[in-house]
Image (cartoon, rainbow, N blue to C red; front, top):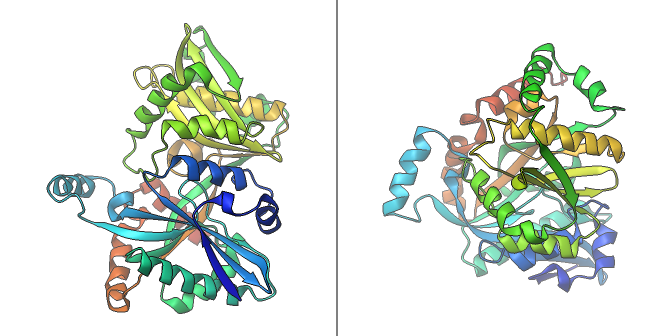
Length: 378
């Protein structure tokens, strides 16, 4: 058994990647785009493991200075921000993270001895973390059901934290009206009022594969929207929105909404094999609430999904209140993390208890409580 570490996806052939990963949209070309555009925030690595000279595992990883307050919201977040103005590295820790900065965590793995491979991967992560002076190693945003192979990490004293869940809406409707009728009475009444308010407004929607001349305007909307969120992990540079169209011309779809010719909203979605991933959104907050742009854009994308025979609409994490009302299903995801120092790792468990997202997001806390209440008896 052997291990090699590469610094970009291009160091791995497309055929090697496709043999180990499922045919999902956030795959080889998606990671190539991350390699090309996110180097100011992350240093990407690809840990590969071989059996008899045959590649059997690809584990995308990235190195970053991780702010432990990322998931903290409310008054405590404001206190931390004031402290960080004086001590910029307060609560920041250098971390090597297995997964992806911008999507659900996955490991490409095909072996008759997956537990052995995962243990070999963790040993490689420890060595890489040591060489890069990282104090934390972690597995980010892994759904439990799809990564049962991660069971061996329990013997390495990782702390488990339930991360922000992903959200998805099954599209099995013949029309938007059919979907609309499936919602609760209160939600239908609220949406009717919102849509009626903008019925006479000349809002146009366009779909295209690249932003082109709208790049600057769209990116301004993206950063504006990002600034409204207390929880921020990655901040995509403008080049990401250019390169994703070059690297994934068939999968990248931009939805653009205009009022009187002015761009007021956009969504970057990735489409493949009947699944639409709503990746990034930008709204003009000067008018977003006045014209209910969030719900308007959602309606138009659902209609597009129905017309294009999309079976699943994935909307990612955060902003759970409207997604719950719109009948999205929530998929639990988990973070497994530990300090490389065994003694400090004991105390790091207490930090994980403090920073877990459910402490700060009441909707997330309610979702988790509901999940526990409906869990099958052992």
